[in-house]
Amino acid sequence: MPQISIIPKPSNLLLGSGEYNFLADASISYEGAGADSIASLLTEYLRPATGFVLPITEGSQGTIQLYVEGTSELDPEGFVDETYKLEVNANGVQIHALNTAGLARGIQTLRQLFDPAILAKKPQKIDWQLPFITIQDTPRFRWRGQHIDVCRYFFSVEEVCKFIDLIALHRLNVCHIHLTEDQGWRIEIKAFPKLTEVGSIRKQTLVGHEGDRPRIYDNKPYGGYFTQDDIRTIVTFAEQRHIMLIPEIDMPGHMSAAVASYPELGNPGYDVEVRCHWGISQHVLNLEESTVEFAKTVLDEVMDLFPSPYIHIGGDEAPKFEWSECANAQSRMQELGLKSENELQSWFIQQLDTHITQAGRRLIGWDEILEGGLAQNATVMSWRGEEGGVEAAKQGHQVVMTPHQHVYFDYYQAEPKSEEPLAIGGMSTTEHVYAYEPIPAALPEEQYHQVLGSQGQLWTEYIPTMDHMEYMGFPRICALSEVLWISKEEKNYTDFLERLKVHRQRLAILNVNAHPRP
Ligand code: ACM
Image (cartoon, rainbow, N blue to C red):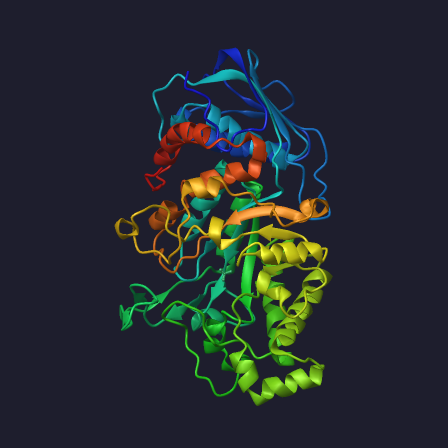
């Protein structure tokens, strides 16, 4: 029997003596609202490696029994209690949860109780055994996420789904997908077809690092986007796994691809193309009434596609240069009674906040949305450090902590950098990620509950393939999943590294190109 090596470590685990033989006569039963969907997912997970076609029946007679015994009602922040109890004994496996999300976490733990070969895509000649065990498990944080950027480079539906399945394996529950950028617009919007006809294609791509001079390009057009049907496929895949898929439409900066498609969205006098290199663009949206309407229409289509309670509107890195230079923007500010360009940005975000709130969703944005006054219902993603998160929490808002110093997985992860593939910069080792504490030291205790959690960021300027994305993501995502699941006191890096050895076998079987260190 292999050692128990679950990542993230369950909050409570009691190993019994003995094991259950999981044989071809195994079956799955379910009771409670929605539990059948998790039963289907579990058979899909177990079939390829075992070759067993596990029958699913309603009731309590299965060798694997799934029970939903509570409510799926969302808390005020849009989350459910993911607590589950998993027991393996002489009768087989019983998983009890309050709702299907808890069951979804429970079956991921069950997958990790088997020999790693359970994750293989082809039948394995193995006697499948499960250790007698009782696991009572609740995550520390509600928001346990991973972000991916499909704009700087584009990834296929299959690749994104594989990535979401890896997120699920680590009992994370949020995937934040960055869909629009200066370098490419990657989601079909029916009302504005040129966003993808024009905006999804850049004429070439920078070779080397953004800081290198002279700039050298590859002279090859680069493009790609998700149709609305593609998005529906990804949304359904995430929903089955109870992963909250949060779309980001980044505004009013990072909009060169949109302005290249519809120049009337930009500020007059600037010739804007889909950007072919990295860094922060000076080009931003104008904030005329028609542009605000454009943004709302795009968000309406996005909200029709994505059921997530949160809609990310970006708000980061929007230079105020064009607005301060441009007579139209200055008169717009006067007309609206605004005293600064920062206030203009905040006014715009407030328009989006009202629109998103009226649709029954919540606006979330990067911490720059604090600068000209925070919109009433906004949740803040604190990326430039912890200060934005602390400030937003003090103002009574919910926050997600994403400080680049700890959870930017586009940063280097090992020394010497010269032996690593080119990255944006920085350094955040797996050990550094594991040591991260999402509650900022500067936050007063009465505001701790406003920290929803954290997530890793995978910006893809220097990550052209999914293989490379996996190399940057793993094992740092494994470390972060544990930071977000167990209490600060229970964390133990040495113990994590021991479990990681077995977990690496899982990643290898899943064809995940994880970094070899630590
Ligand atoms: C960001 O990294 N610009 C949010």
